[in-house]
Image 1: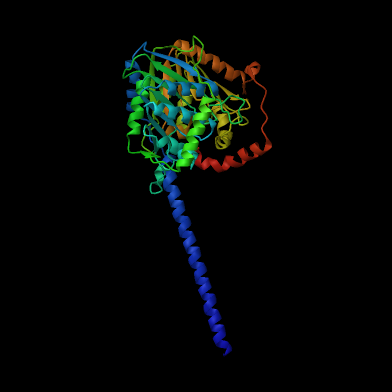
Image 2 (image 1 turned 30 degrees about the vertical axis):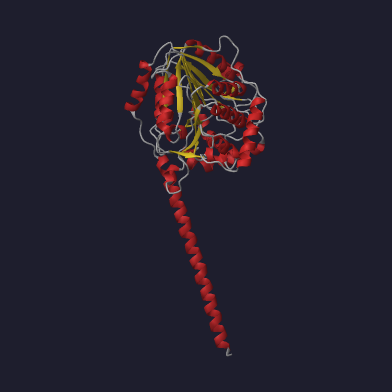
Length: 480
């Protein structure tokens, strides 16, 4: 065959290879562009949150003026052991209904003990509704038989809030962040604890996080009690189009039987009792429940604005605890306004060494000096475990508990549940816990030298990650 024919075929082959390579590059660029567009659609709405809604906040705050007085009692669950015992006790006491909401439900030892108690309650006829987040909650359930063992029981229904829908990218970031348990419309535990070993174990547990709950008991049912306010909100959320049932049908029957047996065994091996202190429960004057809008999209900051309104009414002092501060300019201005009032403002948070949220710590590198610039004192925890406490202590009669972090995610993205409890004796108890937190913290204020705990050292690996991420997270800090 003449050489010219061979070279012509070779040229055609090379040309075809070039065309295929160009097509692949073009398809790759298109794929990257579509991926970028998808990410843009998922993230952009949250970069421009809506303005405040004074009318909505006024309606929420007005509820406190109508609240039933003298019909509720409250206590504080400070340790993980108390928190688990209180939850198990509430489940054991339930006669008709249990409503439970948790950002996540871990299939660990604590989750299994809770599951055993729920199965025992369901066996005696208690109707149980369990709501978890449709992304984080689903991830923690995974393929474990525990949710199937619970959800396939005729008296237990499990729902996901805003399950993942790739056709609605703007909803991927909106998460259910609240945590509470309601028993028979008379008892309530609400705070920042998820159902997992991180929050429901002794302090010496390797996964332990410090946190705080309020437990509330209503002598009589009434539409304005704290328990009733949270119950009405839960019912509206549960029946919304954003909550979808899961696990109503069983999976592997043998694994379900084994899971139920394990949950029962772990529960029976543990004795759960409420506190035996005679003064554990103290009288409550009234309660005020605050929550964010529930639609899975960018939110008007109802909870943040409501908390700021409560702080603006302070006469003497404000003690604010949050695991981290990730603030936009609007939130900074709100704190500056409160700081300018003739009250003493004290802030408590994790140090970068003690905190376990690396992303938030990376942002804190930029935020710390701005938060510390407030006239109020800034204390940073120096303990060996991370603090997950989110609470407010205002003057001598108001304590606030809940799931709200002082960050942009809690303000504008997630659902949140917060309960303000008006009670002087409860305030006295909270004051002791705040003093304990201060004693284990450091502040940059030279005049507070006597209050400073030894500075906790930070491993160089953690420090390198925090500093390395600090620039990368800045453009998306509103999602942290």
